[in-house]
Image 1 (cartoon, rainbow, N blue to C red):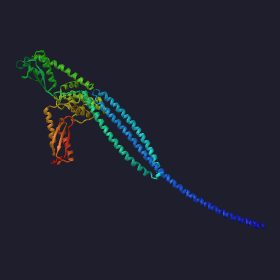
Image 2 (image 1 turned 30 degrees about the vertical axis):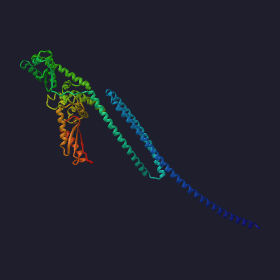
Image 3 (image 1 turned 60 degrees about the vertical axis):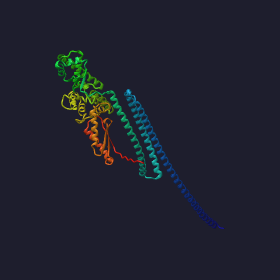
Image 4 (image 1 turned 90 degrees about the vertical axis):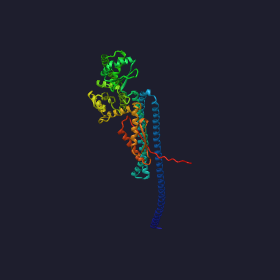
Length: 520
């Protein structure tokens, strides 16, 4: 075999081997591609299953986090309510000790301040915790976005809707609790202010009388007082400006005058004359002159004492004299000077609570009825007369306006005028402050019942609780629920317009259906 043949055979074998190898390689590649596609499908399926698992776990964690946060907030609220209840119990126990009221009130104020501070600190803590929860929730929302393939707008809408519902419920609970707490605290605090002022004032009833009685030891002394043909008694009446009544009543002489100071001077003069036993015109004039000087000094000292008791300083001498005269002036059985002192304490307590000028409020309240000392001597009502005197004595414009406007005769120009009017009503309207005569009391009750009975549909009206409440019974067939509310309001407005009274009158309208059957 030649070399060429060998070479040809070798090349043929090489070509055949190359073709065979290429065919085998293609078979191997095709098998690997099929295996790769199979593994890729399995990987994709496992990835989708893993993604679904992650999404579910994320939702579970989000719900757990939400429940945990709600439970934490509920625990905080329950703890706060428990603390508030404990505080209320402590306050109710402390109110029983009236003799230690001022010290206990200061202690309660400190406790309230500490409680407010603790609540403020807790609010800050809750705010920070809520901020952290918000951040955590944002992270959870981001993961949910990635896993669930939601748009950000859709996710935000769902989260905001859920949060708004939860916060609305929590907000309503907190608002109701805050309103109830504020109502209870305000009622307790207002009662405490009024009771403290009443305790400081310590006013009592006085008879609203225009006469004074003087004891006479025997009929002989009564004859001396009358004098020959009534000479001594005429001299006495001329010197004192009062009326003297000498009747058959044994051992008593009556001195009558509307001016309380003048009546007191006459009474003291009569007592002095009876004590001396010398009764004649010159002696009467001498004793009256001395008693008047003593009375002027007494009025001045009484006015200064009232100023000191109310904590008012720098009062003009003229106003001090007028304040002393009010010791002998009463209104519905309430002594006017004691009323002013009590009103000043009320005004100071209210001003302190409202963070206002306590001294200015007390001064306006203390001087608001100063005109009653001379309103019978000059023309005009006591608010206008008192305001004019206070202005001439150098009082501030705010005080003058409070005096002039406390009965709404002029427009109020400051909050101190409002405080003066409110404290005047509180002092006059509190239980035990004033006393009416029996006739006036019956007339006021009758007028209340007449005003209420005049409205159509009203069957009966009863004034109860000493005229503090009117109970009205209406015809059920003629008066509907809406009309009943209107009638009650109209009755209240008519009472305000027609009657004068301290405090307030409650109108209670009753509309009911009664069905009676008998079983025989």
